[in-house]
Image (cartoon, rainbow, N blue to C red; front, side):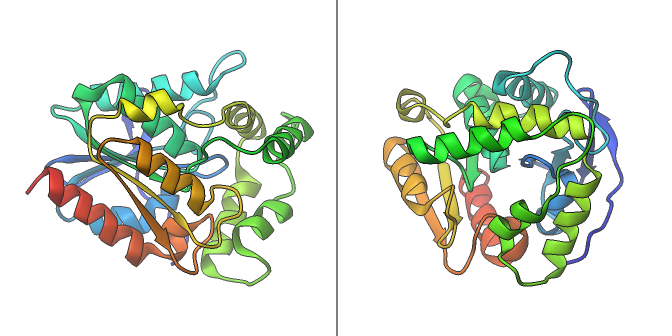
Length: 262
């Protein structure tokens, strides 16, 4: 996997990759990354579907939100994207993007026909909650944070093309955009049980077996609560599963798409 900058267009005020034709699949990345992190999924899904991968506010080519945003701010930006589409979309999110995708799917069921939450957080422990809030408080808006600890959590110490790509993105992210998004992420504990029980569409909750924060137990718990939920735990994978284990993730995405669009 190499770090490739894919062409962007504008969708609902966001810079976005927009490729392919057919039924729409919308991909929402996590904090500190950008739409290029979905390269393996764009390559696979773009042959059969229209794939829209926005740079979320404050990331890539998209402007920072005004004021002090909450998760709601990012949800509204993603909702604006799906509302531009001529039919309901399959919505896929990673990390913070998964939290956004689930919120959009609950809020706008007529615009979302299926949702996949990859490496999603659900009901953090008090210790994990304190740790993520402390990390958010340590960032400022004038310089990008040292990504070393983040890369260690995501990849360990082993070098890889995926690690190198993420390091490039994290070192070049807009510091204000990163601080605002990470703070919004830290202040949300994920979807509520009530929201998950109301999720009407097919829902996939997937994470890596080695994921210490968005744990397998979290994905399994969400899958049980969602009426049409299922869980996928990818062996040997951690937080950057869509990049490091793209074959397994892409196969699951295609299965979900074929379920709603036979």
